[in-house]
Length: 170
Image 1 (cartoon, rainbow, N blue to C red):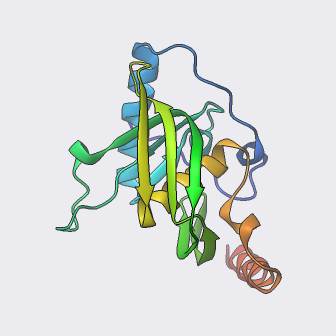
Image 2: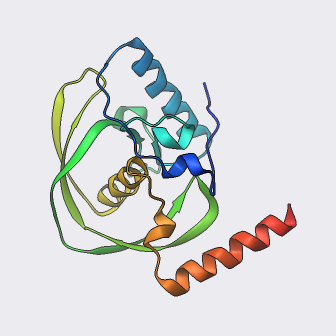
């Protein structure tokens, strides 16, 4: 089922998400709905808070070398924590909760995370480049932050101006 995605400036997006303790059929259905929503909205990542549920869950599905988002590559990341990070990368980011706005954000190039899968099993993952950026972006959501908060002063002013212009067109 495709869920509604909350958009800026919805206050719920700034909530801190809670740790998942029950790995049951309800969680599995929610993960499936998150995947359907992410694909339907043409995203590569989605955090639970973006669909109104303040739990530490995110899904990521990057396109493969053929440009296809293959469901077998889907990452369901629950209760993630960053164990290590190094390097620096600047990547142009966008967000389903901040539609039609993209800007460059500085993040760690390489990260190592520990998380749980849909069955509660612990997994460690090393990520770099786009996957690293995507995980950090979605983890920001879990902590109540949007990527626009990482923009420099000039970039943030540009975002505010563009956002206000779009509001007037509505």
